[in-house]
Length: 414
Image (cartoon, rainbow, N blue to C red):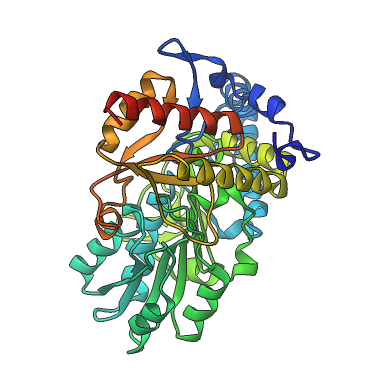
């Protein structure tokens, strides 16, 4: 086992014991879960916190004067405080949404329609998840903005020369880009991107769905204008996510949805809006899920991001070396700064067949275009298999993946 995994504060055996699902078998084989990038497994601390909320403290929030409602409201707002501290933001800048996808759609529908004018441009990159492409296409079609695509290099890094060309005419008002690619594992240089965009009069939105799992994020140090992430990738529940927006931007944005809890006053003639973040949280929110997200944040903070990042860097280095040693297996993307996402192809075997045969061995990976179909085509492919790592992933599981791929090759006569 590597020194990175044995460092103080990172006991891989203890961490794995925190995740009940990892002890089960699949098809009679020990489960090797390498699909955390799609949705991570949940530690007992998250499960228990959500059960405790439902069993002892559940009621609707912000509405009741009774004890249960007050306790549930306290828990919900405490989760906001933890999310704010997690990103180094003010609590008024934290909007709870269903997931990163909804957060980006909220920005497109509110900031996009109020701050952007027909003819203004939004720039995304070639490596975006559909969640950071489709909303801008919809805004283009309904509102008349221009959508521009910044190129990446063959290594899977952002092409800054092309990015400068996209901004050259001064019409770009928003750069919306991934913090970490869910296919290539590439980390983008976010501080440099923020400075680049701001110097040219544009705002910066970062899709942090992958990045927040692997390294600490400080939106103040980055100087991001918007940042989104999903709870379910951060070892928390689905149905809860976070949108960070600078207060002055949220103040100027109209509501996303109308209904209860997002209003200051309502008459038959007109309504006025609550202050952010409540302006953007119409209706009964994901109360129990917010409690689970808070527990997940506590969990990763207790381990510490220096230890998590070191562990996952060692895993990624081992995975790249191990897969490179298998003839006919080709890793996609060679960015210098990359995280625990490894997409690959196998000569003569479709990615779906790779994933299906690995599943028979108890190994869970993803196959397809990973909600990044334009990127897959940019790479000259129709699909890839993808292994993604979490805090509980071990070197032995990487070795099991390699052994499983060799068995797949044997099945196909390799």
